[in-house]
Length: 218
Length: 265
Image 1 (cartoon, one colour):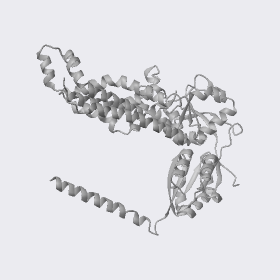
Image 2 (cartoon, rainbow over the protein chains, first blue to last red):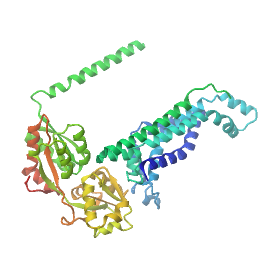
Image 3 (cartoon, helix red, strand yellow):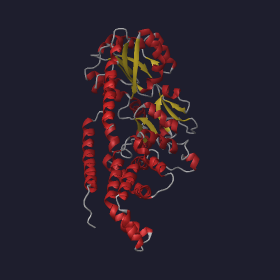
């Protein structure tokens, strides 16, 4: 499989897997007033500010043979280390904060009075969320998904530690660029750089368009 | 208030930049010892660090090390001429730097050799009696320094190819950026086996040697060293290269398991 395809596969899985918990956490932080909120908020932001190598190393120790999630401790093999699933895990952890933060802002921009009105008109909590909050926040949530996707696409430090850089299996675009640079394949490296620039440009441009304030005529 | 804060910030930046500009000045005065920047193969890390104090005293110079895979170091030297001495784990990457016109050819020599070993985690139950045993199902992943570029990986691949065992193991190879990262992968238990130098295996208590590649079966392993051209410390760099071939360094290399090559340029 080519580095581009591996990257797309990993980033798609990351997006699908972290969107539900990310959106839920974003909603919790936007709406909930509860004890320990700032603690959760800080914890959910950590991967954004920690060096990716620190995250990768923690995951490696956790999943390694002598770690609490290693084969001897669990009795079975999760088979994540040095597989593409490991790349999904590593870049998923790195991408989660972006999804949570963007989703949080998206929910905060929904006027709570609209939700209140829906409730007084007899809509339940779940239906209010599904029919009022979610549609109003949809642009921000889509931006959250794209940002998570892009972060996963570019992740390097944690991925190389957890998934290695196996050509055709775990070698994503970011890893392939580094590999080509190391072995002196400058032309191939530059081609891959061009591909990533195009992908990143498209993603960020879409997010900009989505987040641009537009008077909401509902 | 905010204007005052801005003024304070400006003062801080100004004083820091003055300090930064002033700091290097004493170092460049004549009393300071020469600083020799040494780019050395990752497998030489421990032995060179161990030798450094004696060497610094003897040469009245300060050694600054940059350890890494020889391919990375060669590319770094070619990108920016910031090294005084290059110690490559193979001749090919030294040739690469020489072709770029950066090697002081008269100083170049083949300094050391080494042996390859197959290692597993300290509690590994794996039995490796021959290269073909690496194709057994128990070896799900084999850690190698990147066989496309890193000397340790290229040597390992050459050995397996010669033994006819490369194609059955090729798709279980997990490449690592240098030989010490390969060793660390075996230590962590993330892979069942790995191929490193015997000098790497010797510094780790968390791995055990499963198989030592006989010298006759493996490729010719040769570490090249040379001073680099167009550098301010050229004389000190050449003295360092000669010192590495001297009795004190030779004894340390041999204690660590390296084979010191006869001095024929």
